[in-house]
Length: 277
Ligand SMILES: Nc1ncnc2c1ncn2[C@@H]1O[C@H](COP(=O)(O)OP(=O)(O)OP(=O)(O)O)[C@@H](O)[C@H]1O
Ligand SMILES: [Mg+2]
Image 1 (cartoon, rainbow, N blue to C red):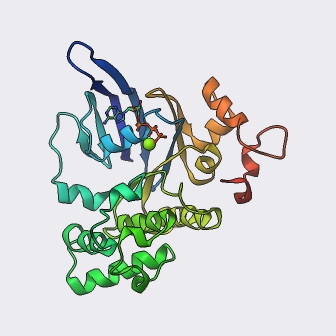
Image 2 (image 1 turned 45 degrees about the horizontal axis):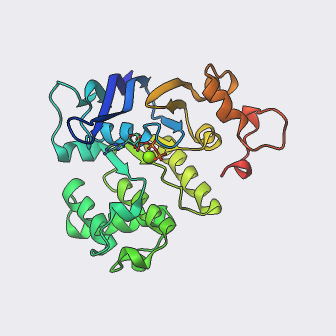
């Protein structure tokens, strides 16, 4: 079986302030997760604001160096003492969708430049093939090539930019997409389209996802595995069905009980897309 994700004793401490008045923030606290599978999977990471979800994503994307511990993604070491793949090789297999698309794209650059750059520099396509790949990726998130090309970030809504971020990440056909709250700015009807697109990409094109969200109901709808984070720790981790039907940690139970439902008690089998938001 392939090691899709394995973190061992992953810690990240941020130090703020001066030497004498240093304040430590334990953004990741001994995170140990192992996902082994023969088929692609969606791993959801759920937790309150500040629980360390983005820090975990950034560490797996090699954008943050952990204070200690190691991480393996698709049998490749991304954090730790071992040898690591080149940046380009890495981005061919692991692609990010960042939490805030306004930070991911400069306001002074045409948005499509990022997509063409990914197609040419990362996927290694010719200019002509790059155009086709960009158009294809945009159409899979419901956007037309001609409606995107030549425009700047201020000419799009937050939701449109998030969809463009999703399209960009699809271009190199990566094994794993690390998606940090990728639908938070998208309206409810389109949100389901993107969420179902991720499931289709898993089932038909072999892509795995690390899907970060605040929302446990969406996590359950989309994922094979769920990690629940609180204060830098993964307090609960397991198969999605097991986490939802038999939560072990009080915090998971609290999240479960806060899912809006017309029923008195949460029933995992009855998640209907209409209840998701
Ligand atoms: N670059 C940084 N410097 C200092 N502290 C940081 C830095 N990045 C994150 N933190 C702190 O680490 C903790 C975890 O932050 P993180 O962004 O990973 O949380 P999160 O779960 O993604 O939250 P949200 O749901 O609001 O996006 C927070 O206390 C945050 O303030
Ligand atoms: Mg975050």
